[in-house]
Image (cartoon, rainbow, N blue to C red; front, side):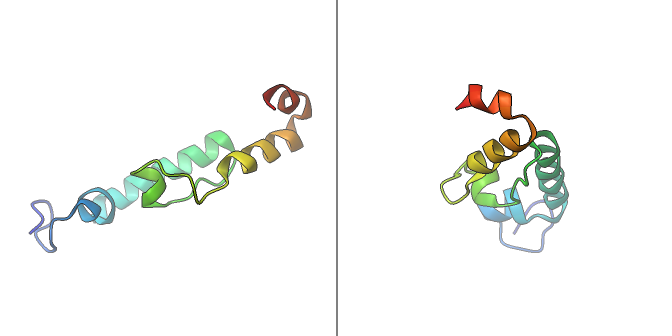
Length: 78
């Protein structure tokens, strides 16, 4: 049993991602990152909990956005 909600089995995934009160936290984190980098930051436990970006092309999306908005700065990044 989960010591927080008492309704479901206490697993790593539930304790860090599926727990109802934490879902709002993760939404806020991803929304804030999306606002800062101006590229949609996916709400995905593999990314948020494990830092695994292998299935996401976030860097290319960010560079494309930078080039579109600030072409001079992008040339320095590449």
